[in-house]
Image 1 (cartoon, rainbow, N blue to C red):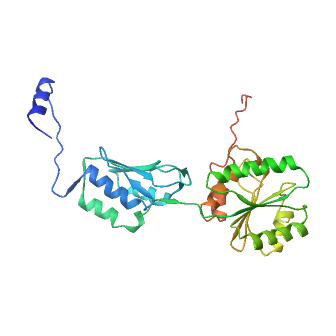
Image 2 (image 1 turned 90 degrees about the vertical axis):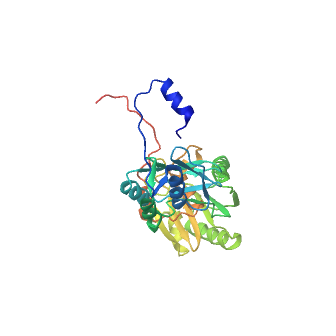
Image 3 (image 1 turned 120 degrees about the vertical axis):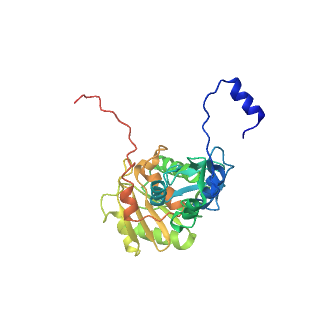
Length: 298
C-alpha cells in the first residue's frame, strides 16, 4: 500500500527503483486464490489456515492416515506453473493439528479464469484426504508351542503398534502348529468374537503358499491376497481375508519395535486402505528398512 509514510521511507532509504505489480480487474489476490484452491483439493477432515504471502497451509482436524491422490497431485503441478502444491508422503500417520501440505500461489494474483478452470475440474477435487481407523476388534492367534517369553514379546510389540490407532488385542488364543488345529481355532475365533482383523503368529516362518498358516486359511475358503512382501525386514508376511475379516500372517520381525514391512500393511488395513497385488508390489519402493554401509571399497 502506497502512502505518505512508505514514500518517506523509500526516500530515506535511497531507493532508486521500484517494481510494481499491476492487478487486472479479473485477478484474484494471491491469498484468496490460495485458499480457494486449498479448500477445493482438501476434504472435510482437513482445514485451511489463513493464507500468508500466497501460501495456504492445510492441517489435519483429527488423528488419522493422510491419503494423497498422487496422480492428481502430479497433474495439477504440471498443468499450473504458477502454483506449487506439496504434501507429506501418502499413508503418513498424522495427529490433530498437524501440517499435511500447502498451496503456494507464486505470482501476486491469479486470474479468475485460471482458478475456475481448476476448481471446476472434478479430477482435482479431494487430492488430500484423511482416513480414520476402520478396524474395531482385533484377535491374535499363537501357533507356537510353549515359548511364553516369545509370545509375551510378540503380544507386547503388537499392542504398542495398535495403541497408536486407538486399538488393542481383544482376543488371544493358542493352538498347536498344524492345519487341522489352526483352521479350527481360526474359525472359532472369527465366529465367536466379531473381529475385523486377525493376526496369526506361527512357530516357524511361512515358507510357501501351502505352509500351515496359508493352508489353514484356504481350508476355511479364505483368499490369499499376497504371500510375501517386498520389504526387508518383513519379507515373510502373509496377507489374506476370510469373508470380511482381514488376516495377517505375522512375520518374525514384528517382535521388534523398529519399523518394518509389517507396519506398512498393518497400518493400511487398520485405516481401511484397500490392499491388492498392485499395492503390495509398490511397497517395494521404500520397502528397505535396513541402513547398512558396506565398509569394503570397490
